[in-house]
Image (cartoon, rainbow, N blue to C red; front, side, top):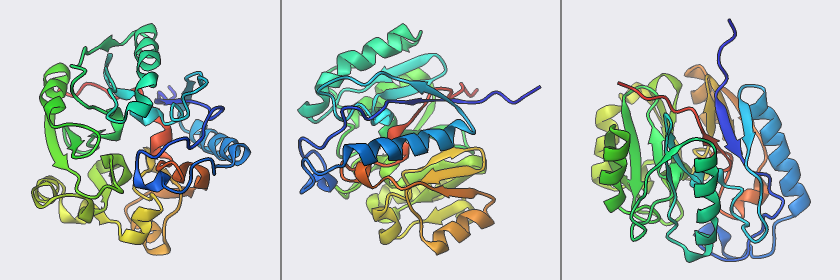
Length: 276
């Protein structure tokens, strides 16, 4: 019997642009992305992922340029979902569309208090070796959301705090990998968070990413089995990943970096299985 292919949600970049500045990467790039190149890069990523997963498409919508970043649509666990409530007001018009998509696709949706900022799988990453959910706060997701997430999903939640505005979601600097490995950029987190990470992930499974690789969004990667899809990685980082048993696929995503996103930001895994 063939293995079940996991499903990944993506949204074509038909209306992608940089119309405002809501993270440091966007500054100076307003109106700069090449839309045709962005479409080509997105299609290349989609085609590469489709060799290993089923790609589910969310329809793009006019005037919602960041809808392409489906990692921020929400977070899914089993048949439950929590839709995002964006801290930047510029992205709040996405929210009705996202909630509608989750409901129409059969998910039980948490009615998260709209006073609480929460930005989906950008700040919620399931560990691939342990039964816990890494959950970020500091810039886009508020700590008050964590108790609600833990209660609704009934999971062990580990709170980790971001301290560098360039890494405004944990998925920009932290990527759990198959077999319990982790790629991450430690300076993006406070001391207590680094201790929490080190206490759960043994040293031989922690792959530290330096400032240059972090700036190329090497941590913002999509992991499917032993395949890793990312924008760019240095030779030493690729060597570390290959020694750990991974095949690295570099896919240029320069136009999306201008908005502060890369491969992981452009995807949402829809098959996070309940772990008991």
